[in-house]
Length: 296
Image 1 (cartoon, rainbow, N blue to C red):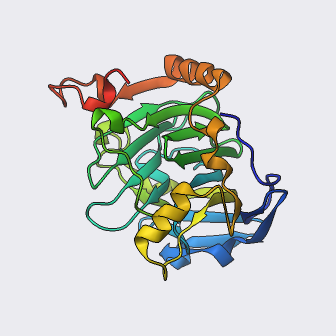
Image 2 (spheres, rainbow, N blue to C red):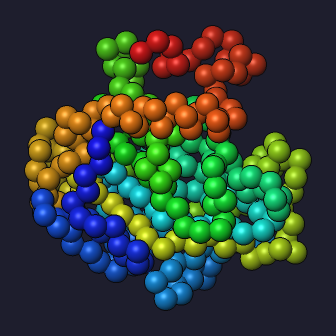
């Protein structure tokens, strides 16, 4: 699965949407995303966007459009210093009680202790698919790229283009796969000291507020859902087409249906060295292993 973007990653505060096979069209960040809550806690500072958490509120933003399949990437630097109790999230989600959702949640920790990255998937409103990993770098010292790739064959979570988790389409085994609900792109920061750090034993120290997560870049390559069109027609267009108004749907091409050999080795390395929790290996929660955890 070699990632072939429609253009060059821009180290600026922009959001790029694939526009043709040979280039991209880029708009200012706030032309395509908007604050979803606490606008006074969203700070524009030159080419950076910052989400701020203090004891009065967190903050969040959402894409103005929804997408069916594609790849989204945030270039993000996490809260520095004592971030215990805080959560910064970057995720995709559809609407409604039976929604689909792909989460990357960054769980803060005490100064000097590692961040944990928790991934999760909700399918038709059902979650409880948490996995947690530490990272092989300090995510507060510099910007790193966090991505979610979604196509009809797999959902892949990536850190600096290294896959850390794959949820494969196993419909042939009767396992539901998210395929027909358009999803928005979201980010937020909030206080979650009832569970985020050491199971809630370590609380947020508000003397260190404000806690700030900083975005330098955000990219969306995806099939943009036309809200005025009929749902089944949009599902067919985004699922079956190789091209659209956004350009070439590279995220659905044959080589994107599975990891490459190199990426498979990266995944094995990341999970062998950095996985700290997997719901598939938690008999205290699941007396019977969830069906998607078994042999593919």
